[in-house]
Image (cartoon, rainbow, N blue to C red; front, side, top):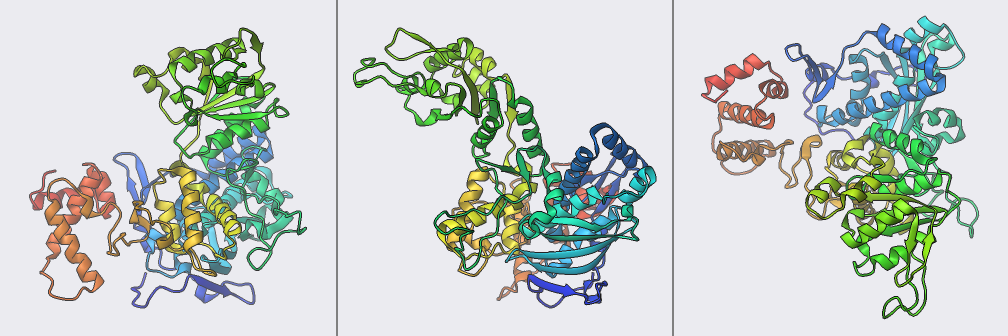
Amino acid sequence: MATRSKPAASPRMSMVSPKGDCVDSLRYPDIADLMSRLHFSPGDGRIWLGDQRMLLVHTGSVGAMRRELIDSLGIDAARGLLTRMGYNSGARDAELARKARPDSSITEMFAVGPQLHMLEGMTVVEPVRLEIDVEKGQYYGEFIWKNCAEDEEHIRIYGIGAEPVCWTQIGYASGYTSVFMGRPIVYREVECRALGQSQCRIVGKPVEEWGDEAADDLRFMQAQSFTQGLSAAAVKRDVRHGPAVALLGGTQPPTPTAFGDDNMVGASPGFNAVCHMIRRVANTRATVLFLGESGVGKEVCARTLHRISACSEGPFVAVNCAAIPEALIESELFGVERGGFTDATHSRPGRFERADDGTLFLDEIGILSLTAQGKLLRALQEGEIERVGDTQTRRVNVRVIAATNLDLKDEIRAGRFREDLYFRLNVFPIRVPSLRERREDLPVLLNHTLHKYRERHARDVTGFTGRALDALLSYGWPGNIREMENLVERGVILAPDGGAIDIGHLFTSGETIDAQMFGLGTNGSLTPSGSLLDQQAGGTGEVERVVRKVNDLLMGASGDIDPTSLDDIETALLKSAVQRAQGNLSAAARTLGITRPQLVYRLKSRGLRV
């Protein structure tokens, strides 16, 4: 790609051919920068695209798998699986876009997706119309696909049919654009060679702009019928004002509900696996134990499980065991009889009785006292409880769901949790993945949360800037969805009316950001991910000196700068790459874009230990 001396273009780009043909301004940049990230390592049996491991497979074998999926599961189930597989692949490629072309225009950054799609052998992608405004969340994309591997295999096996068949590629385009834009974008295949047409043509728009037109396409993003996939919920209505309330100068568009009480939304493999487990256990009476970090949405999963279960007509009673004083936990769970203790002036049923014929959700189960654990064990085993101060045994018909962010096996070894209770609770464990493990769902979650807090605080915030999206996608999310909601709400409050949320509106409480995708450190200096300044082992002082001088040169710092040789810079890079790869020379060589023998030679020539 040619060297660019002018500033990067505005994040809003609109390029349309009046004839519907490809226009010169939409021609792709040189693909050499992407090809340089593709590494074949036959010595250890791996192919890498950046830091993602790839596979080189036969299209015939993919076609055979496709046929087996269709014949064994049915065409709808097969289409759903392949669409979601493509979505995941596109989402992963989107993580590479701004890393590959950080100083390019927004359209050149976006072109990474179509170019990778071609580099990976799927199809030829010709742009017809592309309108992008990341900060306002506006998108329209129309592309032509030629020589599609997917429809070739489908036509070879099934011939010409009545439905478009490029399912994996549609999923790829939706996943890539959703992550790139930071909001759910859905493509539809409006022409397909499997329909007897000469080429395939796709159109992509934000979910809510499709209306009912894309309802059939959207259902294939759903892993289970009780989830919404990427689809939009109905517009919220205010009974006082009739149709959709206009809070921000216009009708609020319907937004995808994200891990809410009524709907669960997502397309990541981790999310789909949880949905599958919930569906399998829903119509049983088995005790379910949700495991996962704090803030991942365990209670929401529990509410969903109750909603689709046989006891959905009964009550759902939630107890946060961490919020109840130890002295009161027994009376809260099992109830109390009048005179049972000094302040018990009247009889009161406990949570077990209130949840009769329904579901009792015990959150933070790991912190229960050993005494309460013993009584809970009896209630689970016998289906009977006794109120505090009572001699009467009461039978209850309760489905128990528990949740914890602790490792209960560690708690057992430490003597803080009963092993027999653990085995009673651990009948059907479901691990809810952290937000770090389901980054593909971030666009939907961010979009939903943005709209929610725009309405709550009546702020006219348009969306997120490109570098804010980069930071959000690369952030570690120690607080998971709860922390994401806090950050977005903070951004909505701090961002200017009519403007977009920028990185400075989000990370104001000392959060540590990985600058890998956007190139600027939190202090404003040019600092790559895994900064050389973070290295703590041998040579730290020298590396720090080199990085400081390079930053001064690149940032145009005034004053005299001590001379720094290219040899010093290369030595610092070699040390950093090897240290970051934890001594794996093959991985370090891939990071530097050289071969392992070349890396070994350079290390030895500098007297560095190999």
